Length: 208
Image (cartoon, rainbow, N blue to C red):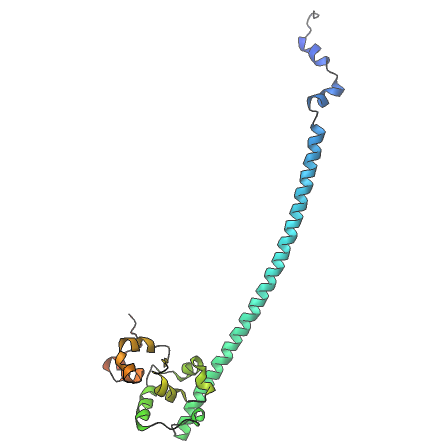
């Protein structure tokens, strides 16, 4: 059978030609390599497409941010202009009233002069910490368009039109708490200022 000292596996290995052995043992080796290359090419193409789409979205995002920044800048500028105009207008009203010593200011020349009762209420409102003429003009633009003096406008229409005299007085809340004020057509702030609580309070409703 085998010669002396001959390894039986030598015959088995030698019986398969080395030039054909790898192909016969892995006949799909070349196919697997081609499939791998095709998949890699497909993934590379998808990656390039995704990167291009991401770049396009990034450009759109940057443009949107630029538009938002421009809009925010314009809004801030408009607010500064409005604040400046309101402050100048309120100052002009005060200066005009003090200099001329009249109850009718530049904006109130088309209004009828206040009655004695309205004059008393007007003095009380103007001296109140709750009335802010600058805030009132900025909040209620119809007063500016109508050319009306803010203090007198609030005295006459504050309760009827449910207007706040300033940021620290809630007219709606006061009328809810005191329904007789609206029923008797009394100015809400005047009613409050004639009470002890109104003379001492810093806001309405009071801060808890």
